[in-house]
Image (tube, rainbow, N blue to C red; front, top):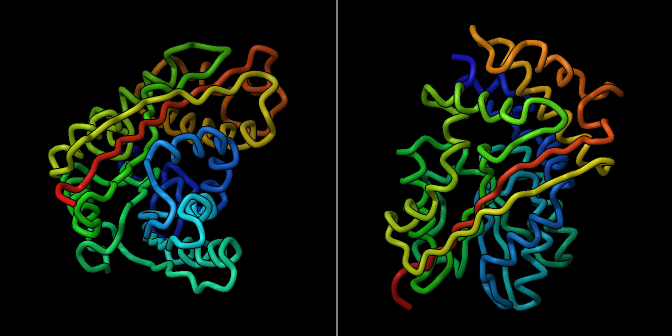
Length: 286
């Protein structure tokens, strides 16, 4: 099935997961940096904390985590892709010179840390790669490695809020709705607002959640134009490969070439949005 095969999404890391290569992760971060910083600041990470970035990618959040935890804090990180873990280690080394970074290659489903190791865990743009059973297991692992009273914070993309102008306002929504008819990545991108319930089911308490929209309007900043051009092209290729493309083929063709000067995002009325959800809970006790 097309949307279950991560290679069809493109931009894969060594893990084979779509949209996890360092190039595309960095591009997405650059396009959304102010909003990502605001999301991180809702997690309640405090100075002096020992923090894990679980699913750190190439480490874009690590300098901010080092800043939030301060000189008395400690930042650790883990990612499934070895090349991303290596890039993250170098980034953390630059952010906190003189302090050996603890960045590991490993799996959220079996974290290589003892119980109650961390004061907080930050997990961004990672749960989208887990099916329901895997996500429950990952949340149990995050809870296990955080001390009683500590914080588990999860952020991810909400694809139901992706829309592009000019053009059919429901084109991308209809793609995800069609693609989510079977289990796989597209369906998991629509599950994000269930995080509140899922954190509570994992045994976390005082759970809170906020969903926000990231918007870019013409003229799009170069970073946004670059990332969303690539992302729209990936979705357009998948839509056109469906037996019955949502919308019409003609509606998707303008998105195929990210560099085209006639791309919808180059229009004077160009616009794109995406949703993000941050859910935060505490480990009981403490």
